[in-house]
Image (cartoon, rainbow over all chains, first blue to last red; front, side):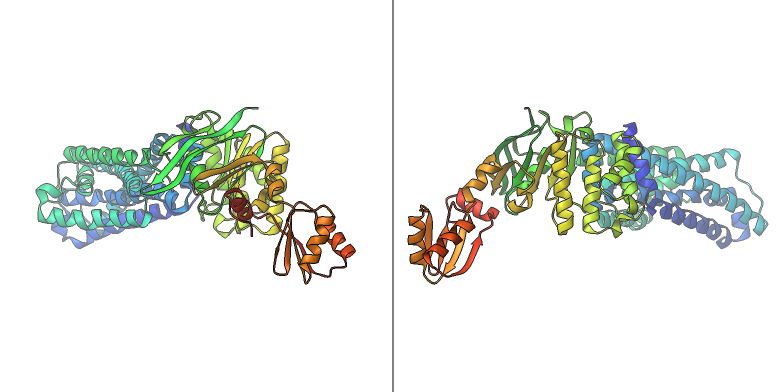
Length: 244
Length: 298
């Protein structure tokens, strides 16, 4: 397992895809912080609830972490490298396990960078607008921990979806359609159900206080459940069957 | 000599299509064996089953007496060369090897060794997407050699190679065999591997046609000389007098079996028969098939 993990980490480091996705995540998170702070009026942005939304912006990096995870498996099918990979480690469960650990580490990196950027930009932008920082230490810790945990779990969800779909374009479209369209529609239409979906659960875990979101702990449990479900399905799909 | 690769009643069905049917053969240690058959005969499917990439519908595919998935250190026991396109275009050749060396637990210094071995060290840091087909083929071979295996399994390795590349590969496989390694190499062209292999396994439509020494096989089809002349009857008569009995006539062409072209030329000269052409027909795999399955060569 350790040898395979080294191999998977090397795969991530020897192409530029993960780096570009990390850059895109950073850009999106920063944009969100600026948009949150500057779009609200002074009165609103002075409340703790509203400031928690700002400091939970790092959770947006979770989607990019999911894409990074997804790429690590769909690239193998797209370019055929799955064949040498499985020739060198024919125990497919070991390959998937190593990939999961590798992308979990990637998720942590996305989370940590997301938190660092969000906090740095958040404090700076609030200061620029002359707003007092009012979020409690506990809620700041929650934003940090929840963002990192959310990015980590979403990276694993992405990988599992990639293993399930295999076809890269299909998986990219699926992830986008699910997180950016389906979830938003369902969450807006039936929030009592939509809030349990992985994207909304990630926001909740990061302490984002948008109305109808779950409380952080329940959001975390929902996200863990989604991760387990996708990982079980993705692993089962990979375990048997032929590699074209 | 022990068996290193074995198919026992191997069968693979895709829906209604039977790609491989009750296929049984064995590859002995230390031999260079050609795995031959026309395109679509089931060679790649068989190799994929042997290498654990596809599940047999029936029968067994064994490597060193075990299923591939049960091998302890597969990369150190079997080196497989499948499609040359199995590379990430944005990853350098060296990194491609580093990734797999890590998975096999092979020392990183081995990467440089195999790069030198396949003569790719000069371009190793360029993206594989910019490699020529020949370079990709050699990188794939380098991949197979990472674990220093004693058995090489190659699927149509000469496909798309230029003549120089084909010769390089032939010399390489010969050297590998000479050092005691076992090679199992597939091809749809007998001529391509005829100078490399000492044994052949021939399949057609997923079934075994023959498993034999190459020398036995070539003896069955070699020595067909096509002679073009305006006086075929005279030539045939002269050949019979010279003790060559196996020949057949068709318009202005005589096909002579079991004798060298030089001899036919001599006989024609003595008989005063002018020749239009005198050609040793290459023993194409197609001829072998037709020969072996009871059809007429042509």
